[in-house]
Image (cartoon, rainbow, N blue to C red):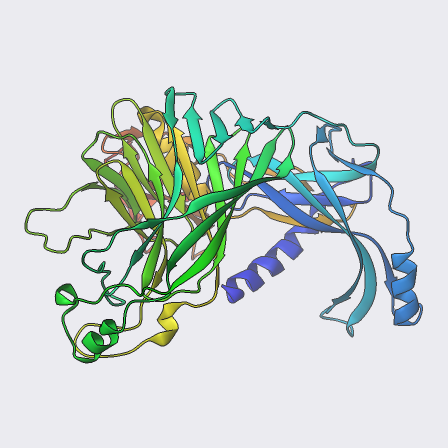
Length: 507
């Protein structure tokens, strides 16, 4: 990841020098880029340097004082066509900064910085430039009013629990977001709940509005979870005795601990996807925490994201399955839908899910276990995960026929927006634009997976696949298909078969 970020940073540094921003009224400019292959709605933050004082000019202490003494005017954000943009602007004060140019010695200075946060909707591979201008911020009524967030897609209300009303299906999901804790006397390979124990559910303790404007609302939910500190003493004996996990008799400790799960819920005016970011400190051992979404679903199957396909699985295992637990693997999302309604849950790195009772999606956000398992006793105390955690996931209520659009939004959730400050300059690249317009980037049923320069530099390679079980027409100007080795194949462009992968060479 660090190597990738380094390469990305170098390439963007080179690319941003080519942006043509001469039409801007201000010298304080920044550009937001959607480097992903999916349409994306999100917030993005960028640090903008208002002024600098170089250490070559004055002593560092005086440089700091000069920057700290600057008066920052009121700013608003507009695009380069003069349209106002809802944004939050924070004064970060004076901060030490440095540059490491390749052709000179290090350049140290003090910068007076601002942090700009704004909601934005960008097409795949698109970018847009904005400017800070002096002016008074216009106040708009926020989405959150009287305990309710209302958008064209959903109504979200907060009482003793979270309730989501889907305006597209007229379905009300009460107690939509829940946190469940169960004991775990299994191992790193397989979860196993102690016999004769029941799940514990966190209680919603507090609701706080963090941000509220016309484009999005952010609310903080605090759930309190009281749970045993660990399994009882019998578990260690059974682990050392190499007792097979399904025949263990260990239970949960009578000693209790408490955890606070703090969740930021963000709801956008122009997206049906609800965003969740949950933080907590794990203070217990031998347990599993899951987030639950009840879907009111009547289907016996679920869809989940896999590698180059969407897999359909039965909600319940075959009769030959002995373990009462039936967790499955997902990549970016899992979805339950029937003829009237659907719920899709996306995640970042939370790859274990289970369908409970046919209508509840359970996603594992923590497993804490003390042994590796398999063929001997291999204690793994670090796998008890006694530390801070932050997890991110989404939930979207929608019509069943809109599920592929929801899947695309789930994939878009994986890639953050990129933002950086630029100079007012002449350049060869427009200040706003889109790098590629191709049907595979826009069709709901089609999932693009890669865009790269061809190995022989003869063009651009675009790879995508069909998420559906029906043929899809992808009409492209390209006439060249290649395989994974980028060798030209004789097949002609035509209908894309169910779950078919296609790689095009774009000249």
